[in-house]
Image (cartoon, rainbow, N blue to C red; front, top):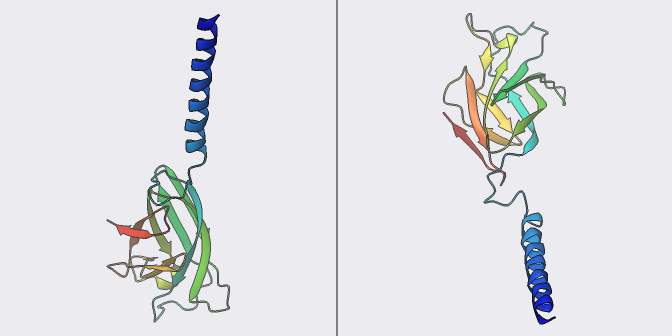
Length: 150
């Protein structure tokens, strides 16, 4: 009889320990600063055209193209304020993952290239691009910081 009660007590202790261990994992904030788990995130991309525009008569809106891992996406950037040189779009990325972004803009065609990434903002944060034409790669961290990477 005593052995049976002892086994029930041990079982209860193990069960309670498992419950509290699980609660600690379930209650963890997935966006805590130490979290490096990739999460899907929609971010606002703002693109400002480099002046002067070589082909102002073009009517095709620029396309924001991005990729990370095996995913590739593209959205047209449109003006929300009537300023046809400041354009925005939302893109879906994965946090804690290297994302490469470039903008195809026919109005900025320089004779050989129409990829422009001079003034690009992600969620209001300017990405510093070291050259006028090309792409920019970044990691959007779960704590909201963005790091430009090679």
